[in-house]
Image 1 (cartoon, rainbow, N blue to C red):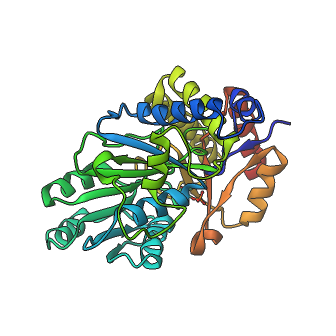
Image 2 (tube, helix red, strand yellow; image 1 turned 120 degrees about the vertical axis):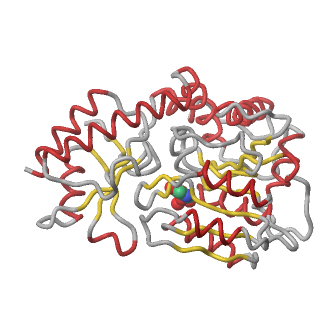
Image 3 (cartoon, helix red, strand yellow; image 1 turned 90 degrees about the vertical axis):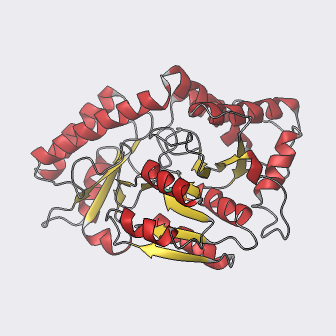
Length: 357
Ligand SMILES: *Cc1c(COP(=O)(O)O)cnc(C)c1O
């Protein structure tokens, strides 16, 4: 039975991406690796048509969190102050990172899953004490898609720059790169881009990439990775298979119609799953239109535990995800990222009928 991952990363790989990952044993100091690294760097910029004259894609080894931490700890300096929005696990993580690095910040908290109160953010920013606003685009905690374009517009009015965690949206949702307030976004290979885990990246405006002292981290410093990558090198041993796999995954994304086509595919799958669950009496957590195309969260039926629901999917060959923190007793989540074909979807809707009958 084909195993299908419906958790929010890592995702089910296409046969081409899986083969690319183990294509050869390759040293990262050889020209073949540098060619793959360059293709990945330009391919990442191409996903949203970012001009290399204005933007740099910096790849670094680690999971998505390293991109969040590298972005905040490398770009925020001196007298900078950050307003962080927390309406889920990953917004809270941004604040933890700022705490650990001693980055001056305030956090605007909203109950997990709730919408961001734009008026409140506008009032905070109008105090004039912030250099940056940091926010999670797709809050994977509940599937809520935060309004990045609206926040970018407010940032522009207040002369504030926007740092976005786009780890679970890059490659499948619209990201407002045209807004001059958007300064950087953090991403990973193993979510909407359908690559292997172990490789993360930050897309950052070139003017923010100068080496700044004091450095907050040896390994996570963006300028260090960017400087070496510009010289066709790499500062540390990168996750070679993940780079080879992402090169292939980016080619597949492009040949299948880019992020807009991927968004349409995810929406089709998510709507089909939601309809099958509705037939079985299972309700979505958020109202229609509030979720990303990537993931939807659902209320656990009162007579079933998460363990039972998870086991039901697992015996049918599907891995789903639980709720985080206090939500774990009430929620389960289904992501439709990854190489999921129409036959897989048929199997999935049949499994849903069997599990919740
Ligand atoms: C997955 C994810 C991350 C990174 O989490 P890791 O555990 O480091 O992979 C960061 N932000 C969001 C919104 C995510 O969904």
